[in-house]
Image (tube, rainbow, N blue to C red; front, side):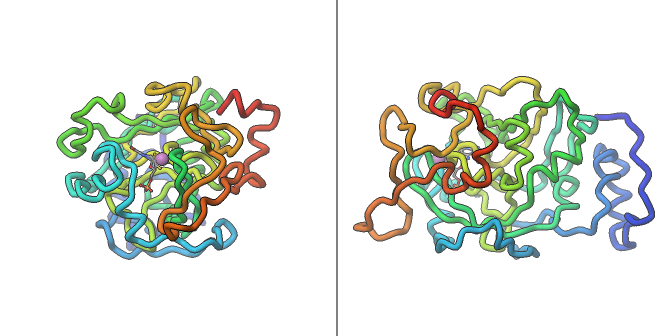
Length: 317
Ligand SMILES: Nc1nc2c(c(=O)[nH]1)N[C@H]1C(S)=C(S)[C@@H](COP(=O)(O)O)O[C@H]1N2
Ligand SMILES: [Mo]
C-alpha cells in the first residue's frame, strides 16, 4: 500500500453530495490512495450478474458483423477452472461468488494495495464494444462486451518507468473453481501483456455483455478482452494486477511453450504445431457454412500492427 498522501482534489472535481458517504467509507480503508483519485460519479458500480448496466455504444470500436447469441456466448466457453469442455463452465459457474471481490495491485507503481471491486470500477464510464474473439482452437465468435479501457484503470495506479509488463492472475480457490482440483494447468491462471499492449485503446476490462452484468462463466466480475490476440490472453475473474520489469511466464507458455507464445497475436500465417490457423469456424453459423479465413491480428491490424514493427512475428508468436 502506498503511503503517499492522496493528491489534493481540484475544485473542478468536487464530488457530488450523493457519493460523499461512499467516498468517506473507502477513504478510511485500504482504498485511500486510489479512492482519492475516484472523483467521477458512480457509473460502473458492482452489481449482481444479469442486472442491466448503463453504457454508451462505441460504434467506432465495434465490428458490424452480426453478434453471436447470448446462448452461444454463455454456454460455449473456455474456462478451465470449471472444466476443460465447453459446456462445464456454464453448468458449474454458480460455484463462483464474484461479489464481494477484491483486486490486489503490486509492483512498479506509486499506488499499490488491495482494492474492493467498487473502488476499481467506480470512476469508469462503461461502453459497449462489439469485438471478434478468435480462440486458438480455430473457432470465433462476435461478442458485445460492456467495459472500459484497461489503460484508464492502469493509469490510476501511476506505474513507474520500471513497469514494462503487466501480469494478471485469476482467483485461486478450488472450493469455488472445481477445475482447479485437477492439474490441467499450473494454477492460478496467469496472463500478461507488454505495457504498450495493455495501454492500447482496444484493450478493455469487460464487466458485462449484451448490456448486462457479466455471467460467471464469462469471467465475472472482471476480465480482460484483447481482441487482436488469441482468446487465451483474455484472462477471466482477475484478482491480481502486477506491474513487472520482466516478461511474466504465463500459464499457457509454461504448459506448452512451443504451442502458446507470449504474444499470441492472431496470425493466419503461423500455424499451431498441431493445426492450421489459416481459417476459423464461426460458432453459431450453419453446419455447412464454409470456414472463413482468419485475418491478421484478428482484423485489427490497422490499429495494432505498429506495436510490433521490426519484430519477427514467426519467432515471437
Ligand atoms: N482464467 C481463465 N481465463 C480464460 C480462460 C481460462 O481457462 N481461464 N480461457 C481463455 C480462452 S482459451 C478463451 S477462448 C476465452 C473465452 O472467453 P469466453 O468464454 O468469455 O468466450 O477466455 C480465456 N480466458
Ligand atoms: Mo481460446
